[in-house]
Image 1 (spheres, helix red, strand yellow):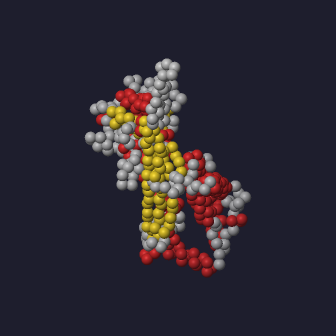
Image 2 (image 1 turned 90 degrees about the vertical axis):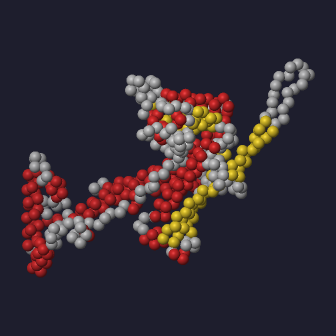
Length: 468
């Protein structure tokens, strides 16, 4: 336990360094005159935040060890009238441990057990002699206390029978976060900060393009075609969340409960944004999501008994549609965790896995994993990164049991996000001593910049696999 102190200090220093790193990232963003972070800054900020969270947990564990060590040291102090320095058995210079000797008594086969028993007996005699030297009034108090203890009936951990001496321990600094998916597909979009002073983002482009052709002979007419234009539009929408809290709860809690609430609200915002990027309807304040964009490439996977080898062809077809219509390769395959782990479980006729770690021998593989993640990039199929996202709907199709698979060039999907707004509003609910904690943010999504950059695999073969 003696090493817990320097370890605790080292962890606290590391936490301070990471917090300073996070502050520097935010300061750079503010220096640019923008409240939002660039994609690279966001990744660095999130990485530092995860390290801080791990350090917080480590600091909590070390603090518990230090507290226990202090409690044990207090329990091992000699009784009144007995000087530890006079104890030649367990004195500071003895090199022996009272608690270690107690443990050795439970191991009678150990050759160290007998010397430990001798030391404990000698130590008990010294304590008895020290107590016999106490003044008479102190000995009387000890005698009365002993008599009182004899009158108690089986003290135990029941409150009122000794249980108040064993209080419950609430590790409020280790709050259990709500289970909620993140925003893997939203993070694959081409990220931009939301420009100020607008309620929509509009990208002009060709509808009918120009045309070039062969001049059949000298002085012959040149091919001519006038272009027409179109616009891809993303309206600015708001995602917000509120939690009303009694001011007493914030004032009297030993932990920063407002930070816990804000962290959960932001996590809920991220999940809602990801859902809109995937399946927003484009109405009622929602973004137009990938699954509802008109003109995307539809690939039907029909099978009453789907297998992983059967799925491989529709996935390749979906990637081919992007390549031949968008003229650039897909960079993302997004699927529900149920489909990915179903794929990962597949075996060939020789019971060899069809999904192997990256860098394996490659025999019969249809996919590789690196690493096998629960969210985000989990592996690749045909060289295209696979994104696992639990926000993908699983209730589509005629049987309301299908989960579509998206094969897309996500670099063509533009997501504009503003700076997250965090507010504590004491005035709104002041009549009941409540505070309203609120987060909100503005964003715009343009998923239809190139509809042919997106392929959607649907059909009976996309039914959520049983057991996954």
